Image (cartoon, rainbow, N blue to C red; front, side, top):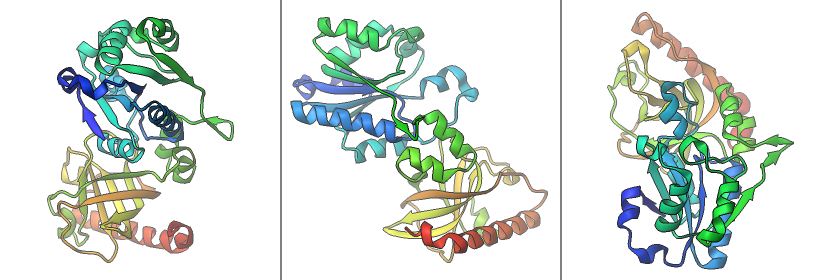
Length: 317
């Protein structure tokens, strides 16, 4: 999979998209079943026409640019989204920096400069509620109106339903916020997890008797607090308890996913790990002293171990 930025696109060899591309556009937060359906569609069209499948996404997401700290929390960070595109077999991802200049780009210029001139789009597949361009003036109708002039076709996907419920990032976000991971998986099509490279931390967990693996989380994600987790590491599966947040007892500011793996203590710095969320235990809070924190961690560990024991049959599947 090739990851492009707008500057790369402007410098790109014209032969890259000489045969044309099949394009879809969106945030694709969480990569749920509706997203997967759209990606499958552009892959099939691209293969049938011997063209490249291409996804256009935005970083930051438009609502994050306009709403700042009031924007909906992410389901997945950028890296996890890119991994999902790669696993889906997408040829090219164009990640556009959503800044003031892009926010002021008209829908017509978006079509002319990015879809046609940049990507040589021959088919554009979009969700039924997709909007683009300045003031959200672009939609399926505008694309359809411009298709003859631009020599491309447009496909509008219908809502993807499960049990008569529309599959959407907003609905999944609500489920994850309330710890309903089983229900969320039904709409995601996969367990909810976060992944990343293990970094050095301040070694606070080790000092407290609970060494953790630490993954920086660069965006404000929908999960926060303490959870029972399943850990995928170097081809093996482990269980543990994780805290995701800013560690207020240590006056932390950067968001970190700290995971204590049961019966495991090895040097893993630099390794990639995936943390699957199984059960919410409690919210993150600030403790008066380290003794109180240690007592709570011991309680969290027991809560997690008891839950795993009672649910070991299905969580191992």
